[in-house]
Amino acid sequence: MANERREMLEKSTTLYFGPWYRRSPYFESTLAAGCTAYDIYNHMYLPAYYDDPDVEYWALVYGVTMWDVGVERTVEVSGKDADRLIDYITCRDLTKCAVGQGKYMPVIAPDGGIVNDPVLLHLGQGRWWMQLADSDAGLYALGVAAGRFDADVTLPDVHPMQVQGPLAAKTLEKLVGPGIFDIKYYWLGEYEIDGIPVVVSRTGWTAIPGFEINVLDRRDGAAIWDAVAAAGEEFDIRPIAPCEARRIEAGIFNYGSDMTLDDTPFHVGGMERLVEPQEQDYLGKAALERIRETGVDRKLVGMFLESDQLRAELSQPWPVLSGNDEVGRVTDAVWSPGLEQNIGYMWVPIHLSAPGTRVAVVTEGGEELTAVAASLPFVDPQKKAPAQSLSV
Image 1: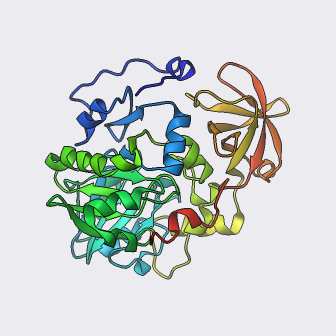
Image 2: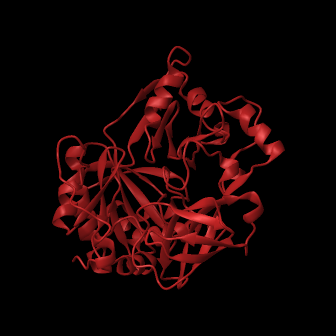
């Protein structure tokens, strides 16, 4: 299946498999499916390359795809004070999050910085799952809980995979029945696939209709992967790597590169709305309310890059220049097949953040290009595509 780009290979090297990194329950299945490159994410192997990114993009946009995202390490918070603890470490008001509902959850440090940005699932009374981005937020929650909250913070035997694309619901209907069409965006349900219990959430890293299937015993991983592949065969389902072009179009961020602990939600374009007014206290509330009043001096914004089609993603940040001064950095840039433009994200001073502002950026090869600031997301700001009715 591999159709490797020379430009991407030139930014890669051999990654040796060893016992020092964890393998998801789907790892061997991804090897058998033709994955030829892996990243390290949350101390685990993340499939990074099966086929040309443009091929995978169109399969996602028009068909159905399957992804190994076991790297979204699941942290469970449960017990008497679980509701209080989970609400205390985020700027979202989780007193309004019903059982069976999910939320996008910035985890907040005392100074307002972003510790992680997991998908949060409310499994039951006093039981929550945080499905993490690339940082050890489970340890953070464990430290916050110590001596203060009567709650357990654990790593359950839970392993997500994604089924994404407009034909995802029809694929899963064959496995769990028509009830799959009734799951609302950012809600979840409990099902069985060939007698194996799973939790399915209507979430994903694409802002396209799709789901995440959570296997509850790693020994069942290969069986679920094979069942999904068989159900999607009539729709030409294919395994793909995380689709950078689609997630940037949708204004989805990658923790550790686009934003870090040094950044607050007010600094990140589109995340301001997640600092929700609420009566109860939470870690970082005072700091964030001060920033709400004073504003920020820099911003992560979208950008259009005026250049020929990019053939490989960044392997390191690019400097942003204003005149002769370095004033920021590009965190990601990629060719968008749908928009037929190079798009990405960049950090710039607040006075350079307005859409249409032009700055210079310097590539890894030393070439100076023009970037034009853009509002986020690039497409579908109301999230109509992923939230649309699935009824047939």
